[in-house]
Length: 634
View 1 (cartoon, rainbow, N blue to C red):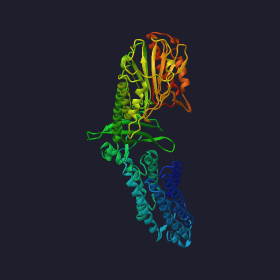
View 2: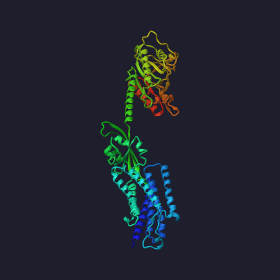
View 3: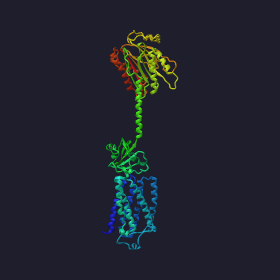
């Protein structure tokens, strides 16, 4: 078997291999540089195929055809390599397209000159003796024309600059992939060295162009490096424009959870140089990341937080961590991305906000406690129950208040009201209203007079508006002595009718309403009625109308005073309403309906307060503060 046949078979086999590699790379063409690498391999395939046929030719005519076609593959190499390198190094699409367009000018000129007989010899030519001899014992060898070296030096310049740019990018990969980077670099340079030797000293290669025989090393190495080791996937293409400018720290991990790249922010967060990060296992750098790595599943994202002490520093940094997958076009996981965000400042702010909120809640609870009796007093012949709940989960002081205290002459008084505003404003107003009422009660003022005086106190000229609604009741129990005031309060219209029951039976309650909802009374027969006469809201006018009425509460009967937050609680466009409240009052502790005695009265009072509160909570989607006060006669 002749030397030419052997060389031709070798080149043919290589060409088949190049075509297979090009097909494999084309499947991953979406990866950065994939199309350029496929074009580069296709050019080598054409070069090898045509040269395989050329070395088996025995006439100049046939060899000249395949030698010219060989240049189609040769001129594809520089644009293909540059397309691959520029895509890999993250150059913009417009720049890459403009560069490749300029690179097509020289190949078009060379191929045109080879196609025209008049200019073909400027690129290459054959010896006249070979042309006249016809069939030769070996393949004819073309000589270099005057423009061949221009084309050669131009191609060398492009290839060397492309390889240099690729080498510069590969050298940025450290740690576990430094060795692979060196291998890829050497593999890219080998065909170039072989071609230089062939063109300058062909006698050293036996006048055989070894370039196509060296290209398999380059092709296989590139495919192995970029598509099997995933170097394209693991080194972000636009890292200079994106990762290096990110405020969040980014660590790129390989399949063994070793750091293969890191941006400056990531190195700064860990207190190390970037060169010291690469190649180390991420668990050693960020121990809490071990949990995320264990829980992470391909395609998912795991999140966590930790306080990490920087290397060489006594200060801890609060970090939020996010671990996600890096995958190729087939969905296979090729590595992982750990993003670290410094949240030290926001955590400190949140901590301070929680402290301020706790202080506010504690202050609100303290104010709320101080504005209502800690426990209700024991009133002869009566059992009391009360509830007060702010709107939603508000930590502000509620505008609703209640109080029960002794009045002059051995009587008792109760008050329940709703002041304007919330928070400190409501606390100040509630405190003023509560203690004004207590002071006037102790002096023996009638309910009407108490509310008139409270109105005067609220109506004083101020920048902020202050008003409230109040129900005030003076309670005379069977064992209460008559009031000792020289001026007995005058009865209002209708008071005599309400006072017609026998003295000494049950409770006598004198009510005055300052713009407040009428209390409800459940009688012994189970009927529910509203009592009291509506009056003027306190604090808005200098003169108010607060009529008094007298209510008799026999043993077994119940009086329920409430704020408007109960009846005005809403579900959409519907209010809870007085009718629904009357039904709840009628049904609460219905088994003890009309039952006298302190034990029964205590059960009834608690049951009514709790049932009203539950009914409002279950009904309302929107509600204001609510307060209820229950008096059950024994």
